[in-house]
Image (cartoon, rainbow, N blue to C red; front, side):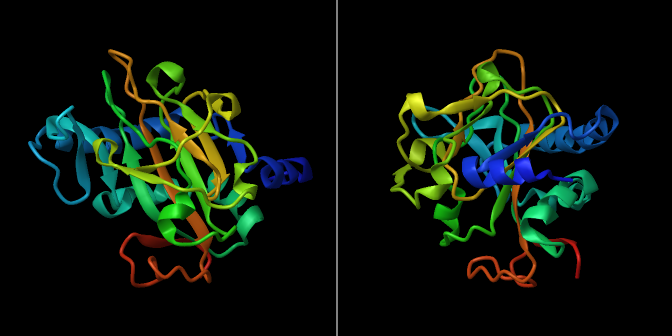
Length: 245
C-alpha cells in the first residue's frame, strides 16, 4: 500500500497525506455520528466528562460551543469502524507492523466563528515518550483550508527531539513556539487521511469562517506490543485493538 518513495518521504519529512482516501459514501456514514455528537454539545452549559466547550476571553465555557470530544471512540464505539478502515490500517501496518492498537481518540468539530484547535505541539510530549512507534492520524471529514483551520506541520521536525512547551489555559493545552517561515499549511479535501510521527511539530489555526465547520478526528496508532506507561493495553479505557491479536 505504500511505495518505497512514500516510506522514505515519511522518515525524512515525518508525515504522509492521502487525499480523498475515504469515499463520499463512507464520509456520509460517519458524518451522521459526528453530527450527533455536536448536537449533544449544543445542550451543554459547561464541560462534562469527554465533552469540553470553547472558552471565552475570561476562560469561561461558551454554552453549546463544543470544542472537543476526548475519548470519542468510548463515547461512540461505532467510530472504531473508522479507525479500522483497511485503507488506513493497511498503510499504518507498513510502518508499524500488522498488530495494531490505537489510543487517545479525539473529535474536533471546529465550529464556525472561532472554533479552536490545537496550537503548535508534539504529541509525544504529552505521552511521556519519544518512541518512533507512535503514529498519529488525522482524518478530515470536510474540506480543510486556512480559512477554517487546516493542519500545519514543520517538515523534518520529528528528527530533532522534543522541545519545550508552555501551558496556556486559554487554549486548552500546552504549546510551543514555531516561526512562520518553517511552517507548512496542509489544505486538504474531505476524506483525506494524514499520518504523521508523534514527534512531529504540528498544529492548526482556529476556524474563523463564519459558516463552515471543520470536522476532524485524530488518534494514535501503535504496535499492540508497545508498552506505554500512561496507556497500557487492556487497562487504559481509550486504547483499542484495531488489527491483529
